[in-house]
Amino acid sequence: MIRSFYIDIPNNKKDNFFVLYIYILQKVFKYLIVPLLVLITLVLCVHKDLLKTTNIPNIFICIFLILLSITLEETFHASMLIIQGRGNQVKSLRFDSIQFKKIKICIGVSVYFNGEFTSNDILYISLAGPIMSLLFGLISFLIISVLIVIFVHKIQLTYFFILFLGLLMVGMFSLVPFNKFFIKTDGYKVYELIKKYKITPKNIVKTISMILKYCLIFVFRSLKVT
Image (tube, rainbow, N blue to C red; front, top):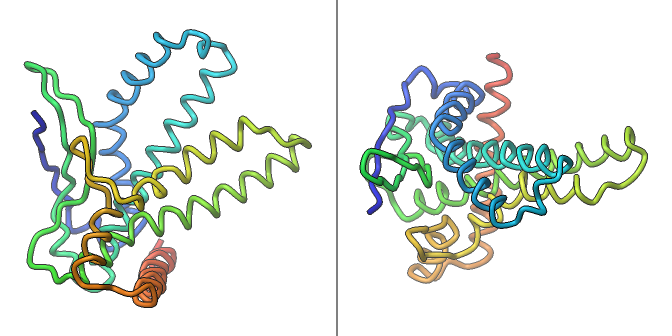
């Protein structure tokens, strides 16, 4: 049985994108790192050929990047409301967990919002996380890839695969309409809205452009403060 617990997001963490990101990152690492390590251990037990010394660091780098991507996505979900002056509706982080007797294993995290929301609000919030996560992931992927080529002087497919998994897969999966095994992606929420309200591709493009505008304003405004 899946249960949820909540961790409040203090108001003083909401005014700056980077402060909010670090706060969420700390909580994500605290509650999700152990389940991920358990999962990796099980995979390694089944596929012992992965236990090569060259593979272990790559696996941990990939886990680290995935956690960064998850945090980035959740931070941008919250940012979409904060930049509109509705930070009071960004209440807490919700961690979904499976409990075996006294052992609690977290399997997911999301930002919990409070209040009434229109279909437009849900569309903007749902798309903001994966779209911005993909944008920043793609920029990071390109920069790191160029640095690898410059300093290593050759293309390492393993490195590119790790970067792809760690920086882009979270955002890409979130945009896929999926509603099974207790997982409901942002892409599925958007799909439901498109189906219900007959939202046109033109309006989706317009929504994405507004998301980019609002979220980047929040990021650059936070840079000035820091």
